[in-house]
Structure formats: structure tokens, C-alpha cells
Length: 571
Image 1 (cartoon, helix red, strand yellow):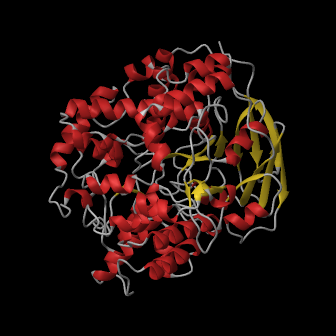
Image 2: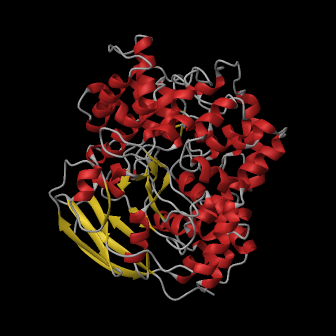
Image 3: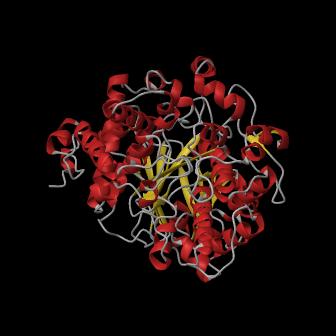
């Protein structure tokens, strides 16, 4: 049983038309919303090999049945084919825009956008309908763009306009981002400057919300988030020797006290939201108030050898307004510094130089220099042009976050098998393996379980930190909304969605070879740890077997039948 009919808004930017289409009932049953439903539409809509920055690519703004209802920040998903990786991309953003979008869409679960506009456009969504109108905000940054509209805004900054392959979609004036993989570049290529949501977050079940908030407050993740949000990640990574420092050359940072959680608390003016599940720390910068996340301190701080919190926060705030992913951008600057030090490029750059880093970030976002333009395409492509392929690791073209996996084989497996490239959000076994003695079977089991679980949470769409306490995978919430899905059904949904995104990537030519360990990780960092490629291949074989995939990394016919995906069989 599924709830009443749900719809999709289809937007053709070239024809300047908007239409409502009913979502097929079997798709609602098998994929529910968010990641799952978006992946099914992407698989249906796109021919293999299309240009991610061409008009034939599709971009979805997808919500789920729990958007704005469940505890934590409301979230939406930006789903498309990534210009950075050529793979499936789902990128998530929280905040006020996400909740407003859930309300503005009414009985629709997503917007599917195709084509390319003749001039910059904005898309306004209200009461389950959408309208297109020209905008004169092209050239404005994320904060300036948001201020130009009435309603809650998700937009691109200069990086998206210049099609930087890791440009973000910035919401709430740049406080929140659908960050990784370049969804903002797809928006820019389509000449879509902004999406404006005019609505209120969906009504919530107050009694059920209170139960889940109390459960989360008693959870380890809940206590950690209440105390430090994600900013304590940098302290944790340094403590366990997994903090990629100075362009992945070291895995601990002697300047950690200057950028860690205590420095953040000292600099902050408060939390971005209060209540049972508080938001991040708000800090002042020259670009206005900013809410740095853990990735900011790790990648723009330790990664660039900068040990002053204010300087790191300022770099993060600049990335926010430019609309550029802090993880890929920080890695790009780190690569350039190492290339400078080794003479691969003729430019003086050094670790610890915040001003030079800021200048280079501006050049990347606007492609205004040859080096900036090269780095805007991603570190792997810059290395193909200049050399230095072993400086900074990337998987499927996506630069890794600063959790160094060289001493944690399960994290290396999570990165390598991530459906969107080098991403720590699909699974984070690094939080536990340093304190455990896992064998390869346990590593595989843990990674698969987390990947499947997050595929469920992102189909519902739930804040994945809060979702750690969803012992029933959200079945109780769905029951209140008319879904008849048990925890067992939802577990199967998670595996189905993960396998569907694998089918998409395999169709794009991304199978076993794309799940490789980057050369940079096969060389030791300062503690002498490195990944043995041969041992990793054995671990990958074990992962594929547990997934029901063949040795090339392709789901078998039996697996597709079991998961009700046999209609999409690649053979």
C-alpha cells in the first residue's frame, strides 16, 4: 500500500514549459522518494555517455516523505550525472530552503529539469506548481542572489556560472550546500540561476517527533552533535592519525589546537539553531556570518597547513559565497602547492599562506587564470596536464575528504566503492575501526550495512546523523503517512537503491577499474602506513561477492531478480 498519488514537476528550460506528471505507483513502492526515486528517473531519462554539462542531462530537486517532518534539519537532494566524475550524483543540503521546498511542492516529490535556457532563469515553486522567469542576478554570489528574491532560495554562485566541476548549489544565502560532485555546474550549464521555494515545511507529528528526538539525544551521535556538531571531526581524525595534512603528506597536524573544536567554541557567537538538535557554530568573517563544518577545518585548515581558526573560517565563507565545494577546492589548492614546491607549475605557493589560498580559490571559481581553469576541472584532470598524479587522491574523479584511510582498510573500501566517488558520507567505518580488530569479513559487512542504511535514509529524506537513531529505519514515520513498509522492506529498499546506482555507473563504464585505490594512498604518509594494492583487490573481491556482483563489479542476474531490478538488466 502507498499513500495517495504523488507527482513530478517536469521543467523544460529550452521550451520554457512546466508540466505535472504522476509518479508510477510501482516506483513509489520500490523507491519511495529522494535518492531512490531520483536514481530511477535518472536511469530512465538519460542515455549512456551524455555530456553532464549538455542540455540532455537531467537535474532533479528531490524531497522525500520525511522532508521537514523528521527531527533534525529538513533536507533535499540534488540528483544528476556528475560533471566531475561522469557517475551518478546525489548531493544533499539542509536548512530553511529544504523545508520550504517540501511544503511548496505540495503533492509533488521532485522537480526534474532538462534543457538549457536561452538566458538566465529562476524557477519559483509554490502550491505544487512552478513558473519560470528571467533573472538579472547572473554574476552575483550566493548571498547576493538569495537577497534578490522573496522566498527561500537555492542558487549558484560564480563557480556554477563558470561550470566549475565541483560547484555547489547554495541554499539560505550560502549557509547550506548541495556540495559534492558539481550539481551547481549542471545548473550553470542550464542557465538556471536559482530555485525559489515559497512554502512552509510540511506538518509534523509532534508526538512521534518528540519520541525520536529523545531517542537521538540518548544516542552517541546525538550527544556528539549536540556538543560539537561536525567540528570535532578534525580533533578526532588527528587523534587517531587519520587527518590528511599538507596535501596528504602527513596524517597529524601540529597546529590542531588552533583550528579544532575549542578554537571554534571560542570564536563562535552561538549556534545556527537551538532546540533539541542544535545546528552548527556561527562565526563572524569578513564575508558575513559563516557556519563552518568539519570538512572546512580539515581540508582548508590541516590540508593547507593553516593553523588559525579565523583564517580557515574566512576561506570557508568565501567558498560558500562563490558556490564551490570546500573539500574539492581545498584539495585543488593543496595539489597546486605541492606542484609549486616540486616545480611542476611556475607559481610560488606555500602551505600556511591563507592569502595565496584565497586568491587561488577566486581564480578557480571564475576560471580567470590558466591554473585556476585547470583546477576547476578537478585535480585528476589538472594532474593529467601538469603531472603530480600521486599528490592528492581521488576516486572516480572526486577528491577525497581529509579522513586519511591508509591505516583503516574499511574506510579505503568505503571510498573506493562509493557510488558518487571519494565520499565519506556513504559509510564512515573510520569512526570505529581504529578501536577494533576487524578482519576483512567484518570490514565488508560494516561498509555494506552503512551504504544500504544511508540509501534508505536518503530516500526518505532524513538527516543522516539523526537517522543513526532510527532503529526501525523510519517505518513508524512512514506508517503515519500511509506507507505499509516494515523495517525488513526498508532494508531491502536500501540494497535495491544502492544496486540501482551501481547499474547506472556500470552503464557509464565505471565498474571495477573505477573502484581502484589512488596511487597517493599506496605510498606511506608520515606514520609509515600505506595501502597494499594486492591486499585491497582481495578485499574488493570479498565485497563484490557479498553484494552479489561478479568480479568485474557488475550486479548478477540473480541479484537483480531478487531486488526487483531485473527489468534494468544490463545484459
